Image (cartoon, rainbow, N blue to C red; front, side, top):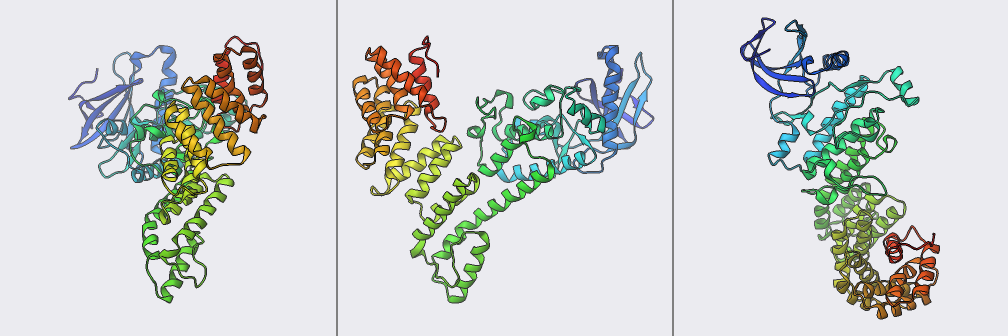
Length: 529
């Protein structure tokens, strides 16, 4: 047995053990006053049938590290791999650089808080390391906070290359034939395909995304819920610092359930990070833009301002125009229109940025606040959506988007079970509309509120009015089912259930909630959709 004071290879004196994991043991050693790390393969705890595989994994780590000369990878000593004949089984040894500092698991446990800028810096560092690893036809297969060291100067170091896999032609053929390989499992960080022995280079991206989720939230990914429809991790509402939606989207893309949904390679990730950095830098300049628009600039300054704004893509300054604070409302409207166009083109990140920019010029813009609220709903950021709608509701009572904000805010209250809070909003909204489809929307939600308050007669009355405006919308029929059952109109309730299912609309954000409510009224019903 090795013990402190032992001298190995007439070079390395063992100081003390550092830890034990898997089938290896780690010691701190010293050579001529320099501290180093000795990693020893411990075959004594394995079955004889496992020896060959364990030795192969250990030697693979030696092979990979010997090919790297990068500050983000531990450097091995010249002739740092050797085998000692001691006891019944030989000891396979590897001496490598000692990385000063904590791993990211320890860093987080000691109260480390990940800022957005630090996250971007660390993401670039780790992707650069992976880019080199993948370039040399390897992938890591065990990325997690405990396997990433943080040097005192801020450099990250990826460690524990025992699970690394070489990308060979034979390996690729096996993947195409769906033959499984060795499954390396770290709960919460291992992607589904790797758990089944089908790891690919994009498996590293999944584990990296999960690592940043842990660093942002302090939660183990395995303890976080998943969206039952998409399989994606629900983590954004647990972030303990500000995170740009663009950066959060990238992290979600990294840990998409299927490899084909993740970025194709490290270069694509780095390019996306550069785009995010440009957006963040641009946002920092926004207050200066606002300040400049307040000034009565001389003609030469006006031309300079116009040239400066145009490349940013704001479209706010035509050649020779005067940008004064007095026309900030029209500027806000133009930016908001661009945001709406981006949203309709399914570019939600750009849309969100433009809506926020519009609000810098006119914080009370009903249209920009309403559009931002709907976007936050898409992102399932309910509190932010409510805040945006409340700004409209508290603002100009003649605003075009006021009734929509009243309705959407009420609908969010309804989904939270706050029926009394929703009621006055819907009643006020009814005073502002005359179109049948708008009447339908508000009266349907008013019926929902009465149902929640168990005022079944009032609920039935409002839902009947809604159905009179549009009898081919599913939501009002779905709500009518529990109302009619409560009023002991069983046959009518069953007919409403049929109509609820007949006019099913997956594009209605509330349909699945309301259809489940309808079905639950008749749990034993034989009615089929």
